[in-house]
Image (cartoon, rainbow, N blue to C red; front, top):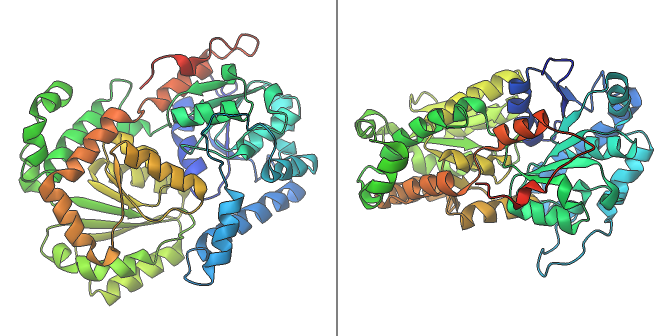
Length: 443
Protein backbone atom coordinates (compact mmCIF):
# COMPACT_ATOMS: atom_id res chain seq x y z
CA UNK A 1 0.00 0.00 0.00
CA UNK A 2 1.12 3.59 -0.62
CA UNK A 3 0.72 6.22 2.08
CA UNK A 4 -2.49 7.46 0.47
CA UNK A 5 -3.89 3.92 0.31
CA UNK A 6 -2.84 2.77 3.77
CA UNK A 7 -5.27 3.01 6.65
CA UNK A 8 -5.17 5.92 9.00
CA UNK A 9 -3.51 4.50 12.12
CA UNK A 10 -5.14 6.22 15.06
CA UNK A 11 -4.58 5.93 18.80
CA UNK A 12 -5.03 7.94 21.96
CA UNK A 13 -2.58 8.57 24.80
CA UNK A 14 -4.14 7.03 27.89
CA UNK A 15 -1.05 5.42 29.32
CA UNK A 16 1.13 3.77 26.67
CA UNK A 17 -1.00 0.72 25.88
CA UNK A 18 -2.94 1.94 22.85
CA UNK A 19 0.11 3.69 21.41
CA UNK A 20 2.34 0.66 21.99
CA UNK A 21 -0.05 -1.45 19.92
CA UNK A 22 -0.29 1.16 17.17
CA UNK A 23 3.46 1.74 16.79
CA UNK A 24 4.47 -1.54 15.07
CA UNK A 25 1.42 -1.40 12.78
CA UNK A 26 2.18 2.16 11.70
CA UNK A 27 5.86 1.32 11.19
CA UNK A 28 5.10 -1.64 8.90
CA UNK A 29 2.48 0.34 6.98
CA UNK A 30 4.88 3.26 6.53
CA UNK A 31 2.57 5.84 8.08
CA UNK A 32 2.58 8.02 11.18
CA UNK A 33 0.35 7.46 14.19
CA UNK A 34 -2.38 10.06 14.39
CA UNK A 35 -3.89 11.00 17.74
CA UNK A 36 -7.66 11.24 17.64
CA UNK A 37 -7.54 13.75 20.51
CA UNK A 38 -5.10 16.18 18.85
CA UNK A 39 -4.93 18.35 15.72
CA UNK A 40 -5.48 17.88 12.88
CA UNK A 41 -8.16 15.34 13.80
CA UNK A 42 -9.61 17.19 16.79
CA UNK A 43 -10.55 20.86 17.02
CA UNK A 44 -10.38 22.84 20.27
CA UNK A 45 -13.78 21.72 21.57
CA UNK A 46 -13.16 18.05 20.81
CA UNK A 47 -9.72 18.25 22.42
CA UNK A 48 -11.39 19.42 25.63
CA UNK A 49 -13.65 16.35 25.63
CA UNK A 50 -10.67 14.02 25.25
CA UNK A 51 -8.55 15.89 27.81
CA UNK A 52 -11.20 15.65 30.51
CA UNK A 53 -11.47 11.89 30.03
CA UNK A 54 -7.68 11.34 30.02
CA UNK A 55 -6.98 13.58 33.03
CA UNK A 56 -9.63 11.86 35.11
CA UNK A 57 -8.38 8.37 34.22
CA UNK A 58 -4.71 9.12 34.96
CA UNK A 59 -5.57 10.88 38.23
CA UNK A 60 -7.69 7.97 39.41
CA UNK A 61 -4.99 5.46 38.32
CA UNK A 62 -2.28 7.18 40.36
CA UNK A 63 -4.24 8.15 43.47
CA UNK A 64 -6.02 4.77 43.66
CA UNK A 65 -2.65 3.27 44.62
CA UNK A 66 -2.20 5.54 47.67
CA UNK A 67 -2.96 3.73 50.96
CA UNK A 68 -6.18 4.68 52.76
CA UNK A 69 -7.24 7.65 50.62
CA UNK A 70 -6.99 5.60 47.44
CA UNK A 71 -9.73 3.17 48.48
CA UNK A 72 -12.76 5.13 47.18
CA UNK A 73 -10.99 5.96 43.91
CA UNK A 74 -10.00 2.33 43.53
CA UNK A 75 -13.68 1.44 43.67
CA UNK A 76 -14.46 4.14 41.10
CA UNK A 77 -11.81 2.77 38.76
CA UNK A 78 -13.13 -0.77 39.19
CA UNK A 79 -16.65 0.44 38.41
CA UNK A 80 -15.39 2.28 35.32
CA UNK A 81 -13.56 -0.79 34.01
CA UNK A 82 -16.02 -3.42 35.28
CA UNK A 83 -16.24 -6.65 33.27
CA UNK A 84 -19.00 -9.11 34.15
CA UNK A 85 -18.32 -12.80 34.62
CA UNK A 86 -18.24 -14.50 31.23
CA UNK A 87 -19.74 -17.74 32.53
CA UNK A 88 -22.37 -18.93 32.19
CA UNK A 89 -22.40 -17.87 28.53
CA UNK A 90 -25.30 -15.48 28.03
CA UNK A 91 -26.40 -12.39 26.15
CA UNK A 92 -24.49 -9.39 27.54
CA UNK A 93 -25.37 -7.03 24.70
CA UNK A 94 -27.43 -4.63 26.79
CA UNK A 95 -25.47 -1.35 26.89
CA UNK A 96 -23.91 -0.43 30.23
CA UNK A 97 -23.65 3.05 31.70
CA UNK A 98 -20.12 3.31 30.29
CA UNK A 99 -21.27 2.42 26.78
CA UNK A 100 -24.11 4.94 26.97
CA UNK A 101 -21.78 7.62 28.33
CA UNK A 102 -19.44 7.13 25.37
CA UNK A 103 -22.42 7.30 23.04
CA UNK A 104 -23.41 10.62 24.60
CA UNK A 105 -19.88 11.98 24.06
CA UNK A 106 -20.05 10.89 20.42
CA UNK A 107 -23.33 12.76 20.06
CA UNK A 108 -21.58 15.83 21.50
CA UNK A 109 -18.81 15.64 18.90
CA UNK A 110 -16.24 13.14 20.13
CA UNK A 111 -14.50 11.67 17.06
CA UNK A 112 -16.14 14.12 14.65
CA UNK A 113 -12.83 15.30 13.19
CA UNK A 114 -11.69 11.75 12.47
CA UNK A 115 -14.98 10.82 10.81
CA UNK A 116 -14.72 13.91 8.60
CA UNK A 117 -11.16 12.94 7.59
CA UNK A 118 -12.24 9.40 6.67
CA UNK A 119 -14.99 10.80 4.47
CA UNK A 120 -12.58 13.26 2.85
CA UNK A 121 -9.75 10.79 2.19
CA UNK A 122 -11.70 7.58 1.61
CA UNK A 123 -9.08 5.71 3.65
CA UNK A 124 -9.70 2.89 6.09
CA UNK A 125 -9.36 3.34 9.84
CA UNK A 126 -7.04 1.21 11.97
CA UNK A 127 -7.34 2.17 15.63
CA UNK A 128 -6.14 0.66 18.90
CA UNK A 129 -8.78 2.40 21.01
CA UNK A 130 -12.48 1.67 20.90
CA UNK A 131 -13.83 5.24 21.05
CA UNK A 132 -12.59 6.37 17.59
CA UNK A 133 -13.95 3.21 15.96
CA UNK A 134 -17.33 3.59 17.67
CA UNK A 135 -17.54 7.30 16.80
CA UNK A 136 -16.82 6.62 13.13
CA UNK A 137 -19.24 3.70 13.13
CA UNK A 138 -21.95 6.01 14.43
CA UNK A 139 -21.09 8.48 11.66
CA UNK A 140 -21.72 5.79 9.02
CA UNK A 141 -18.09 5.25 8.04
CA UNK A 142 -16.99 1.91 6.56
CA UNK A 143 -13.75 -0.10 6.52
CA UNK A 144 -13.18 0.33 10.25
CA UNK A 145 -10.63 -1.84 12.08
CA UNK A 146 -10.14 -1.91 15.85
CA UNK A 147 -7.28 -3.70 17.64
CA UNK A 148 -8.19 -4.79 21.17
CA UNK A 149 -5.41 -4.20 23.71
CA UNK A 150 -6.49 -6.30 26.73
CA UNK A 151 -7.16 -10.01 27.24
CA UNK A 152 -10.73 -9.21 28.29
CA UNK A 153 -12.82 -6.06 27.77
CA UNK A 154 -15.87 -4.33 29.14
CA UNK A 155 -19.02 -3.47 27.24
CA UNK A 156 -17.74 -0.01 26.22
CA UNK A 157 -15.60 -1.63 23.48
CA UNK A 158 -18.77 -2.38 21.47
CA UNK A 159 -21.25 0.23 20.19
CA UNK A 160 -24.64 0.65 21.80
CA UNK A 161 -26.16 -0.93 18.69
CA UNK A 162 -23.58 -3.70 18.65
CA UNK A 163 -25.34 -6.10 16.29
CA UNK A 164 -25.29 -3.52 13.50
CA UNK A 165 -21.64 -2.51 13.85
CA UNK A 166 -19.38 -2.27 10.81
CA UNK A 167 -16.20 -2.42 12.94
CA UNK A 168 -13.79 -5.31 12.32
CA UNK A 169 -12.25 -6.28 15.66
CA UNK A 170 -8.85 -7.93 16.15
CA UNK A 171 -8.82 -9.97 19.34
CA UNK A 172 -5.56 -10.68 21.22
CA UNK A 173 -7.09 -13.64 23.09
CA UNK A 174 -9.83 -16.20 22.60
CA UNK A 175 -11.55 -14.77 25.64
CA UNK A 176 -11.95 -11.45 23.81
CA UNK A 177 -13.49 -13.33 20.89
CA UNK A 178 -16.09 -14.84 23.20
CA UNK A 179 -16.56 -11.58 25.08
CA UNK A 180 -17.26 -9.45 22.01
CA UNK A 181 -19.68 -12.07 20.73
CA UNK A 182 -21.53 -11.94 24.07
CA UNK A 183 -21.77 -8.16 23.64
CA UNK A 184 -23.60 -8.68 20.36
CA UNK A 185 -20.77 -8.13 17.87
CA UNK A 186 -21.34 -10.46 14.87
CA UNK A 187 -18.82 -13.31 14.69
CA UNK A 188 -17.86 -12.30 11.16
CA UNK A 189 -16.59 -9.04 12.64
CA UNK A 190 -14.16 -10.70 15.07
CA UNK A 191 -10.71 -11.97 14.08
CA UNK A 192 -8.52 -13.84 16.57
CA UNK A 193 -5.17 -12.31 15.70
CA UNK A 194 -3.06 -11.85 18.83
CA UNK A 195 -1.50 -8.58 19.99
CA UNK A 196 0.73 -6.66 17.51
CA UNK A 197 4.20 -7.10 18.99
CA UNK A 198 7.16 -5.07 17.64
CA UNK A 199 8.64 -6.34 14.38
CA UNK A 200 12.20 -5.73 15.61
CA UNK A 201 11.61 -8.23 18.43
CA UNK A 202 10.08 -10.83 16.08
CA UNK A 203 12.11 -10.52 12.90
CA UNK A 204 9.32 -11.70 10.60
CA UNK A 205 6.74 -14.51 10.49
CA UNK A 206 9.46 -17.13 11.04
CA UNK A 207 10.46 -15.33 14.28
CA UNK A 208 14.25 -15.42 13.79
CA UNK A 209 14.99 -12.55 16.19
CA UNK A 210 12.61 -13.85 18.84
CA UNK A 211 14.18 -17.31 18.70
CA UNK A 212 17.71 -15.96 18.96
CA UNK A 213 16.86 -13.70 21.91
CA UNK A 214 14.98 -16.49 23.68
CA UNK A 215 17.80 -19.00 23.27
CA UNK A 216 20.24 -16.66 25.01
CA UNK A 217 17.69 -15.70 27.66
CA UNK A 218 16.96 -19.30 28.62
CA UNK A 219 20.63 -19.85 29.42
CA UNK A 220 20.81 -16.74 31.62
CA UNK A 221 17.55 -17.65 33.37
CA UNK A 222 18.61 -21.21 34.12
CA UNK A 223 22.18 -21.02 35.47
CA UNK A 224 22.02 -24.49 37.04
CA UNK A 225 20.42 -26.10 33.98
CA UNK A 226 17.38 -27.32 35.94
CA UNK A 227 14.96 -26.47 33.14
CA UNK A 228 17.27 -27.00 30.17
CA UNK A 229 18.16 -30.54 31.21
CA UNK A 230 14.49 -31.47 31.53
CA UNK A 231 13.40 -30.01 28.17
CA UNK A 232 16.58 -30.54 26.17
CA UNK A 233 14.89 -32.25 23.19
CA UNK A 234 12.11 -29.65 22.88
CA UNK A 235 14.54 -26.76 23.10
CA UNK A 236 16.83 -28.28 20.50
CA UNK A 237 13.89 -28.90 18.14
CA UNK A 238 12.51 -25.34 18.29
CA UNK A 239 15.63 -23.26 18.96
CA UNK A 240 18.63 -25.37 18.02
CA UNK A 241 21.79 -25.41 20.16
CA UNK A 242 21.65 -22.90 23.01
CA UNK A 243 24.51 -20.40 23.49
CA UNK A 244 25.75 -21.77 26.80
CA UNK A 245 28.45 -19.09 27.00
CA UNK A 246 25.66 -16.63 27.95
CA UNK A 247 25.70 -18.07 31.48
CA UNK A 248 29.16 -16.62 32.07
CA UNK A 249 28.75 -13.43 30.07
CA UNK A 250 26.08 -11.42 31.87
CA UNK A 251 23.95 -11.44 35.02
CA UNK A 252 20.17 -11.74 34.55
CA UNK A 253 18.66 -8.40 33.59
CA UNK A 254 15.51 -7.25 35.44
CA UNK A 255 13.39 -4.51 33.82
CA UNK A 256 10.98 -2.62 36.09
CA UNK A 257 8.35 -0.84 33.95
CA UNK A 258 5.57 0.87 35.86
CA UNK A 259 3.33 2.04 33.02
CA UNK A 260 2.64 5.33 31.26
CA UNK A 261 0.77 6.93 34.16
CA UNK A 262 3.59 6.13 36.60
CA UNK A 263 1.06 4.71 39.02
CA UNK A 264 3.45 2.36 40.85
CA UNK A 265 6.80 4.13 40.71
CA UNK A 266 7.03 4.05 44.51
CA UNK A 267 7.50 0.27 44.42
CA UNK A 268 11.16 0.94 43.59
CA UNK A 269 11.67 2.50 47.01
CA UNK A 270 10.43 -0.71 48.58
CA UNK A 271 12.51 -3.24 46.64
CA UNK A 272 15.80 -1.41 46.01
CA UNK A 273 17.26 -1.72 49.55
CA UNK A 274 16.82 -5.49 49.52
CA UNK A 275 18.20 -5.77 45.99
CA UNK A 276 21.24 -3.56 46.62
CA UNK A 277 23.61 -6.37 47.57
CA UNK A 278 22.80 -8.48 44.48
CA UNK A 279 23.27 -5.44 42.26
CA UNK A 280 26.62 -4.49 43.81
CA UNK A 281 27.89 -8.07 43.55
CA UNK A 282 26.90 -8.31 39.89
CA UNK A 283 24.33 -11.05 40.51
CA UNK A 284 21.60 -8.93 38.85
CA UNK A 285 21.28 -6.03 36.43
CA UNK A 286 18.36 -3.60 36.75
CA UNK A 287 16.76 -1.01 34.47
CA UNK A 288 14.05 1.28 35.85
CA UNK A 289 11.74 2.48 33.08
CA UNK A 290 10.36 6.00 33.52
CA UNK A 291 9.17 6.38 29.93
CA UNK A 292 8.48 10.05 29.22
CA UNK A 293 7.77 11.09 32.81
CA UNK A 294 10.40 13.22 34.48
CA UNK A 295 8.58 13.01 37.80
CA UNK A 296 8.90 9.22 37.70
CA UNK A 297 12.60 9.55 36.87
CA UNK A 298 12.99 11.86 39.88
CA UNK A 299 11.23 9.31 42.11
CA UNK A 300 13.57 6.58 40.86
CA UNK A 301 16.67 8.70 41.51
CA UNK A 302 15.48 9.50 45.02
CA UNK A 303 14.92 5.78 45.67
CA UNK A 304 18.41 4.98 44.35
CA UNK A 305 19.88 7.60 46.66
CA UNK A 306 18.10 6.12 49.65
CA UNK A 307 19.46 2.66 48.77
CA UNK A 308 22.97 4.10 48.13
CA UNK A 309 22.83 2.93 44.51
CA UNK A 310 22.98 6.24 42.63
CA UNK A 311 26.31 5.48 40.91
CA UNK A 312 25.96 1.70 40.75
CA UNK A 313 26.89 0.62 37.17
CA UNK A 314 24.49 -2.35 37.22
CA UNK A 315 21.50 0.04 37.52
CA UNK A 316 20.12 2.24 34.72
CA UNK A 317 17.08 4.46 34.15
CA UNK A 318 15.32 4.62 30.79
CA UNK A 319 13.89 8.11 30.18
CA UNK A 320 13.18 9.86 26.88
CA UNK A 321 11.54 13.09 25.74
CA UNK A 322 9.87 11.74 22.59
CA UNK A 323 7.51 8.79 22.42
CA UNK A 324 9.15 7.41 19.28
CA UNK A 325 12.56 7.42 20.94
CA UNK A 326 11.16 5.78 24.05
CA UNK A 327 9.53 2.94 22.14
CA UNK A 328 12.72 2.38 20.14
CA UNK A 329 14.95 2.22 23.23
CA UNK A 330 12.44 0.16 25.19
CA UNK A 331 12.26 -2.47 22.46
CA UNK A 332 16.06 -2.57 22.34
CA UNK A 333 16.03 -3.05 26.11
CA UNK A 334 13.57 -5.94 25.89
CA UNK A 335 15.81 -7.77 23.43
CA UNK A 336 18.38 -8.27 26.20
CA UNK A 337 15.98 -8.35 29.17
CA UNK A 338 15.45 -11.53 31.17
CA UNK A 339 12.59 -10.61 33.52
CA UNK A 340 10.03 -7.80 33.25
CA UNK A 341 8.36 -6.53 36.42
CA UNK A 342 5.29 -4.54 35.43
CA UNK A 343 1.65 -4.04 36.10
CA UNK A 344 -0.57 -6.31 33.96
CA UNK A 345 -1.25 -3.79 31.23
CA UNK A 346 -0.61 -4.30 27.51
CA UNK A 347 2.85 -5.49 28.57
CA UNK A 348 1.15 -8.79 29.47
CA UNK A 349 1.20 -9.74 25.79
CA UNK A 350 4.98 -9.37 25.63
CA UNK A 351 5.24 -12.67 27.50
CA UNK A 352 4.75 -14.25 24.06
CA UNK A 353 8.31 -13.08 23.29
CA UNK A 354 9.59 -15.55 25.87
CA UNK A 355 9.86 -12.83 28.52
CA UNK A 356 8.77 -14.02 31.98
CA UNK A 357 6.68 -11.41 33.77
CA UNK A 358 6.30 -10.48 37.43
CA UNK A 359 3.05 -8.62 37.97
CA UNK A 360 2.64 -5.66 40.29
CA UNK A 361 -0.93 -5.23 41.62
CA UNK A 362 -3.43 -4.61 38.81
CA UNK A 363 -5.08 -1.22 38.31
CA UNK A 364 -8.59 -1.82 37.00
CA UNK A 365 -10.56 -4.98 36.36
CA UNK A 366 -9.15 -5.44 32.86
CA UNK A 367 -5.68 -5.78 34.37
CA UNK A 368 -6.95 -8.41 36.81
CA UNK A 369 -7.99 -10.47 33.79
CA UNK A 370 -4.71 -9.75 31.98
CA UNK A 371 -2.76 -11.10 34.93
CA UNK A 372 -4.93 -14.18 35.21
CA UNK A 373 -4.56 -14.88 31.48
CA UNK A 374 -0.76 -14.87 31.68
CA UNK A 375 -0.48 -16.71 34.99
CA UNK A 376 -2.84 -19.46 33.84
CA UNK A 377 -0.68 -19.83 30.74
CA UNK A 378 2.39 -20.29 32.94
CA UNK A 379 4.04 -17.13 31.61
CA UNK A 380 3.97 -14.91 34.68
CA UNK A 381 4.00 -14.62 38.46
CA UNK A 382 2.26 -12.40 40.96
CA UNK A 383 4.83 -10.30 42.79
CA UNK A 384 5.72 -11.34 46.31
CA UNK A 385 6.85 -9.02 49.11
CA UNK A 386 8.90 -6.38 47.24
CA UNK A 387 11.33 -6.04 50.15
CA UNK A 388 12.66 -9.51 49.43
CA UNK A 389 12.55 -9.38 45.62
CA UNK A 390 16.22 -10.30 45.26
CA UNK A 391 15.61 -13.47 47.26
CA UNK A 392 12.55 -14.72 45.41
CA UNK A 393 14.13 -13.91 42.07
CA UNK A 394 17.22 -15.90 43.12
CA UNK A 395 15.03 -18.84 44.11
CA UNK A 396 13.24 -18.79 40.74
CA UNK A 397 16.60 -18.72 38.95
CA UNK A 398 17.90 -21.71 40.91
CA UNK A 399 14.73 -23.71 40.31
CA UNK A 400 14.52 -22.90 36.58
CA UNK A 401 11.08 -21.38 37.19
CA UNK A 402 11.82 -18.23 35.20
CA UNK A 403 13.13 -20.24 32.26
CA UNK A 404 9.97 -22.37 32.40
CA UNK A 405 7.81 -19.23 32.34
CA UNK A 406 9.76 -17.85 29.37
CA UNK A 407 9.22 -21.09 27.49
CA UNK A 408 5.51 -21.24 28.35
CA UNK A 409 4.97 -17.70 27.13
CA UNK A 410 6.71 -18.47 23.84
CA UNK A 411 4.88 -21.75 23.27
CA UNK A 412 1.39 -20.89 24.53
CA UNK A 413 0.71 -17.23 23.79
CA UNK A 414 -0.02 -15.73 20.35
CA UNK A 415 3.03 -14.18 18.69
CA UNK A 416 1.90 -13.40 15.14
CA UNK A 417 -0.61 -10.60 15.79
CA UNK A 418 1.29 -7.95 13.86
CA UNK A 419 1.54 -10.02 10.69
CA UNK A 420 -1.99 -11.39 10.88
CA UNK A 421 -3.51 -7.95 11.27
CA UNK A 422 -1.48 -6.67 8.32
CA UNK A 423 -2.59 -9.68 6.25
CA UNK A 424 -6.23 -9.03 7.11
CA UNK A 425 -5.91 -5.37 6.20
CA UNK A 426 -4.36 -6.19 2.84
CA UNK A 427 -7.34 -8.29 1.84
CA UNK A 428 -10.09 -6.48 3.69
CA UNK A 429 -13.31 -6.18 1.68
CA UNK A 430 -16.24 -4.53 3.40
CA UNK A 431 -18.80 -6.19 1.20
CA UNK A 432 -17.30 -9.68 1.64
CA UNK A 433 -16.02 -9.99 5.23
CA UNK A 434 -15.48 -13.72 4.77
CA UNK A 435 -15.61 -16.54 7.28
CA UNK A 436 -15.29 -15.88 11.02
CA UNK A 437 -11.52 -16.33 11.19
CA UNK A 438 -11.43 -16.89 14.94
CA UNK A 439 -12.83 -20.38 14.29
CA UNK A 440 -9.65 -21.36 12.45
CA UNK A 441 -6.73 -22.92 14.32
CA UNK A 442 -4.42 -20.04 15.23
CA UNK A 443 -1.65 -19.97 17.84
